[in-house]
Length: 310
Ligand SMILES: NC(=O)c1ccc[n+]([C@@H]2O[C@H](COP(=O)([O-])OP(=O)(O)OC[C@H]3O[C@@H](n4cnc5c(N)ncnc54)[C@H](OP(=O)(O)O)[C@@H]3O)[C@@H](O)[C@H]2O)c1
Image (cartoon, rainbow, N blue to C red; front, side, top):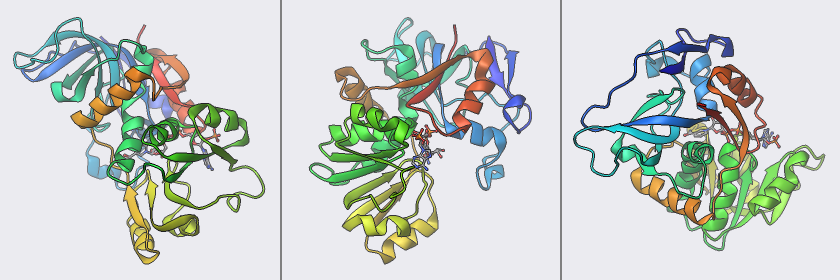
């Protein structure tokens, strides 16, 4: 099979298209003939070694990046009961396991869900990591009827954050550049704010929950915009945010997205009804993975970047 791997960390040039032996599922795994894989910032952060203390991850080189995939089940292990050959599925596991930038991908049964029939493979592959990041940050908070601000509302996490907050009953204000204001409205934001306008961030109002999807701020910067007992949610966990939030009487959560079966089921339900949609920024072929990374590294994706295997 064809796959993308890197033998050393570095810039996007280290990504190589290679031939690898076809993987075989063990008793508890599903082998997916991939049609598309999602591209996430964590993929290029692992590749470049730019995550603080990333040596602790002990990434085994050569490494095939990619955490999420959509495709067709090609084979199943003997203990698999939920899926059969030919099923169209979406799979998601930790970015540290990798393996999704490939024509054939192994996932555990619990990490797979049937792909909603009404969405394409690209939309399936691009959903889990970014959407579950937003959902897991919101989950358990009183959100119905609340004022929610999503900063970076047009990107991978943010565009799901806007839609999920709306679906959970919030009134949403979203922030992106002036070029993305109509996209934010299309996603369901009631109010939109441009971070490149001269009065930002003074133009922000007061909110019960702030999802800082691109981690551009801190709890202390945002505290004056967060109502008492409100929450500041950030995608790059930082112990100092926690301390700042406690001092200011607000709740803090930093994302650590996980592949949880019940959350995947909730997401697939929303994708099935169309309450939440994956917007595709761009798609690249497997051999263009380096271009896909460079594009993601610019930090201005509108929705999700995906790789297709055809
Ligand atoms: N800890 C976890 O579990 C976890 C999980 C997922 C993601 N993350 C992290 O979360 C971050 C976002 O991920 P992502 O997939 O959403 O990235 P992304 O798709 O690359 O985000 C791009 C978005 O950021 C917006 N943006 C750029 N500069 C901005 C600014 N100054 N203020 C507000 N918005 C700005 C862009 O809007 P414009 O194009 O309009 O400028 C664009 O919509 C990354 O750092 C990622 O590593 C962490």
